[in-house]
Length: 462
Image 1 (cartoon, rainbow, N blue to C red):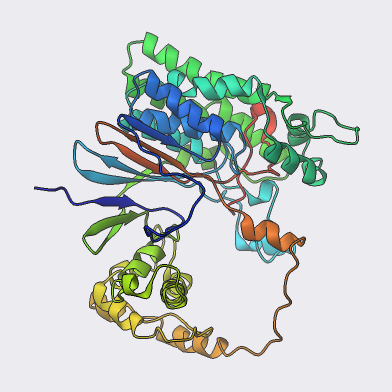
Image 2 (cartoon, helix red, strand yellow):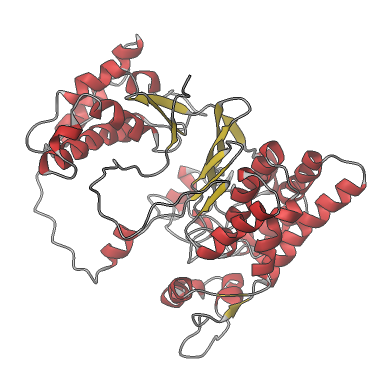
């Protein structure tokens, strides 16, 4: 019997057509695949596969490498992953999203005259999630040691020829970087010169980061020498990062620069291994992380689109684009209204939002022309409950009556374009045994505040 196909989805999705045009050829592999946003990052994955690692080992090596390359993230950011385990036939979700520091209250920011946390700097940071996520994924599902998978990243931390994109990003944001002493030390090797960032192709050295990674490896080695298992040794390194001297230096460096981290914040944070959310789209199981991401909105979009014959519309026809666009608008309006942190009440109505019946009702709202005033629906009856927010729905409907001038057309040289084109990297790995890993890490992108003498750039997720 043929196995049911599975798709692991992250921040974006597309509909594939035989007539779609692209300059990038499809890639095929007999034994393994290693894909990420930077060639050197993918090379790290290839190295691990060639040493006998599985897709989990390779994905961890790629994650470490792209963090070291500042590929729109760093070691102080966050990681979320979906992993297909061929031994169990199940998809596992990894939640390695950091938490807000204890002192990051609404009153704290109001007292500083802020309506919300800043875009950059130490007050934008949540606790680092990526190190814990990487070590948890490796310990639970990998086969190699932390030393093996960190080797490419550690070699790069000792110095690698930096690519133009990252080098120029540093130069363009150097005014902000100069506000943070530890960032200035790492990112601006030519301080006082016309160009203060590294030149494209210059060997970029991160000695503090190398020492931090070496501490993790040294801890693992000591645990193995003491008779601990591979898994226990990796978790010993995890403990050092979040409860030991590494955590202490990150906390000290963050607080010196105005941040709010405490040792307790680090010690109480844990990676979560969760059940992903799932819908079946025309016979294909599609998985996303829970509603602490925006991912389930795309599952809902698929449910809505299942009510239309997209193929007959023609790929990228006006009718096709209109239908896909409005389906996503309907799902995203529900996301904006109903999604919340699963750790806190009220619980998001995910069963209703992802029901096929609710999708049919939402699909009826799709018209020949887009409705810019589209708002959230009511998914509660589709999970046998009464909506406790009907009064807010009414208020929102009133607020959607727009009374404002048309927005000006943005010029291509405006900062608007930088934000419009911004994104994150992606890490995908698969092997002959059947392991499939899909990671979307982020946070700690340039300009990042580096926390003390650790080389770890803090996230901006607040």
